[in-house]
Image 1 (tube, rainbow, N blue to C red):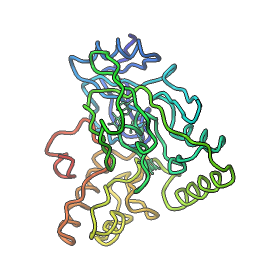
Image 2: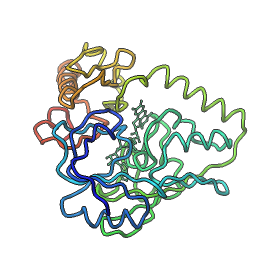
Image 3: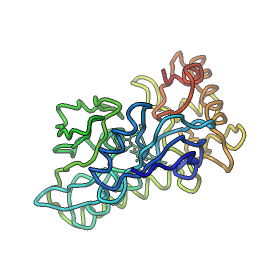
Length: 297
Ligand SMILES: Cc1cc2nc3c(=O)[nH]c(=O)nc-3n(C[C@H](O)[C@H](O)[C@H](O)COP(=O)(O)OP(=O)(O)OC[C@H]3O[C@@H](n4cnc5c(N)ncnc54)[C@H](O)[C@@H]3O)c2cc1C
């Protein structure tokens, strides 16, 4: 396996934030992935999709990162189903369903990232999740064994699946029944229009920062507004005016800027609502004290 050293992760992550990783490889097949996992498992590894949901520390990572590519990037339509490799993009899955009038994928319009990241995060909206469409997903264990899991086995919940952290999604099969073309196109386009209008696409972000708290609390974005943090800025990071659950990179933002905004928001939410907000995003390369300030541990 060809390993690159000291690769700056801000160039690979959607947020354009993150220091260098010690070792990085880009496996293009299952065999290459198996080899990469074997070579990386001693010092630990992480799988990076497009980084559309990960905040990476400014000082970088002293483990290995694997980025899936090549043969693991495919979307194939079969009888009543779509099969996709973990490196394929969620927009390719949504686009395929839209073009071929396959039901059940409208909520993936304008959701950036890979199939692998989407399966790990159980990507979706409040009510529709990727795992609602999954028939099975295939994973590789650190020892290189392939394991097929059903939705019942991974027990999907809001932005979470019960799968060991070091298992790697490599493919999935999604149930995709044929629908009525005009109705499907309309569902996709109206979902996309609303999302692009209400959320932030013109600046780098990693989507919703906080999970929505349970009822009777208001949505996370309303809480951020109520505590006066909408539009707040630290360094190059800003809580977006248009959608206050997004923190955007105005240019040159550092992970510490984002953490600072999160910690202050969380402190104020506790004070005003008696509630500890929980982050939706993942954090790489931070020490436990830092993570505690934003509720990540
Ligand atoms: C503008 C914008 C809008 C968004 N809208 C939504 C939305 O509507 N709904 C939603 O749920 N999310 C949304 N997100 C967040 C993001 O799109 C999703 O979480 C997406 O699934 C992340 O995919 P990724 O490939 O970039 O994963 P990454 O961010 O690279 O990784 C996320 C996690 O998944 C793990 N991972 C990645 N690939 C694999 C793999 N093959 N096997 C095992 N683990 C893996 C990583 O290690 C990490 O822990 C949005 C983000 C942005 C920037």
